Image 1 (cartoon, helix red, strand yellow):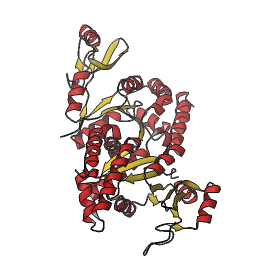
Image 2 (image 1 turned 135 degrees about the vertical axis):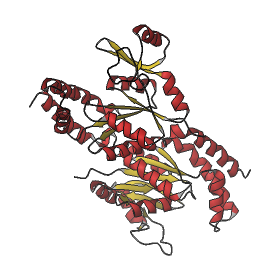
Image 3 (image 1 turned 60 degrees about the vertical axis):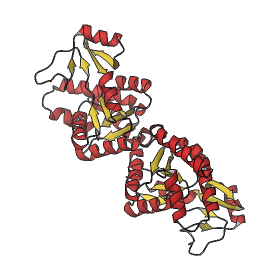
Image 4 (image 1 turned 180 degrees about the vertical axis):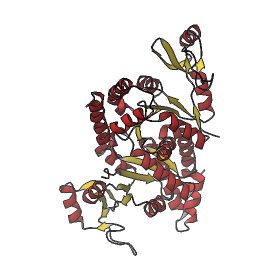
Length: 210
Length: 210
């Protein structure tokens, strides 16, 4: 029997390549499932229902809040974004490690509700490298880049609340590091409690010569 | 610059193959150093000074206690056993992950003094398997085996105090698991604090457009 999966939260500054890392993890290993968020914002060209997001109406979203059907949610620029519970729960039950890619406030809310969740923060090798990557996209004005860096500086204040910090200097190496960290988390006593209890009962019986 | 190594404590019931696991880790990776204990008991045939143990007199050992030169020590059957600080400290400074193979009481003392130490517990797949292994040695009477199992049953009560539980069902796999867990521990925020602080300072400077 496969044991229950781990709820994994991945955060990181814009431009650190979180999205690509998650894609690699899902491509290389069949032990992961990516959580899909619900949002009230309109789909952008190329975004697919149930893959990019679940696109729902404001009424439907508020109904989900009301029914406690979201693990966490937040409102940005007039639109709701949230993590539907049911899919996550179903995948964890199947033994999949479920990845939520969310920002720091949402991550901390998840940790409060689910202390056993694993919080990972992806960082660039340096601020210079981050700026290079943001510039390299070629789509942002220098004003937007300055805002992103300023936001990164703010977000950096909360890094210690995460369980692990991973530097994305090289995609393949970083993917393996993330995978290694998540594998290791399966060996904590709280995630091995069934096994420990069984072993204890057995040892007591054997010690008595039963 | 290599960052400081991690102090690793490995415990496990007699017969779980800890010793062999440690040998494999040291054989496969050059990132580890094995701590050598000091003891007042007499060397057994084949035991080497500075490899198996540092063999010292009772006076010398009590002198080491007096001077606070031991990380932890204990007394068994009239003999002292302890971990000299200097070697461990030197290796950690060099960036080596230093492994102490000690029993549960010593392990908990280490964790108290060094909360950042990583405590690993090696378990057999089952009590039956443990009994088989103890019998398989062919050197123990059934009375000794019963005592070992009874001791294992007692020790099992403290397992939750360890950071990770690793099952030694297959030597090579278990060696890789241990290595993976230790690698992962290098990515906790407390062990990345220098990097985090540097990144923060840089980000603030970049955000200000400096």
